[in-house]
Image (cartoon, rainbow, N blue to C red; front, side):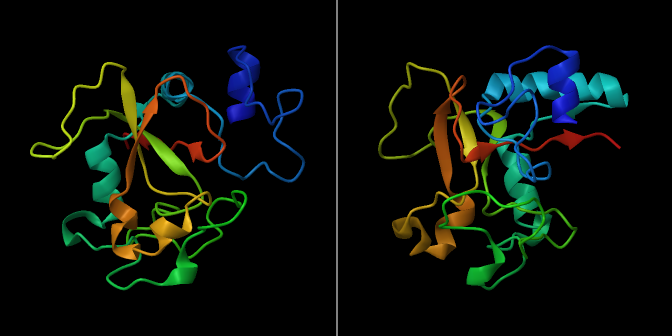
Length: 183
């Protein structure tokens, strides 16, 4: 669908695509190297095409889904850390939905593979000791990716709560997006 969007809307494809197409054999990989603005434009376009509202999730929606809603599990798959369940610590993304990273309701790839844009502007939580005014608008990116460092992996209990501040026009090879759509 992303290829169709790029063709119909004339947009620049991600830098690693050739002639508006993903690399051979990578059609079911997460789309990365897109800015927050580009992800939002795609959401608007797909909303019109599908006839239903689709948006980037808020930071709260993202975490609610990743923690299995009100069950508030520490990992998408449940209460216990299972090192092989998420695509972490590698050198590239993998095909979507090929890991055991799945919530109880079937949402895939919440922890690992690629981090994801949210619709929320980044801010430090109330009471944070480093509460500074951010002069440059940044967006909250949630989740971790194959690019995760060994230092982050050493504390699996922190992985689902990891959040990052990324400028809205930044394009990174380990950041993609997902959409939340009305039924």
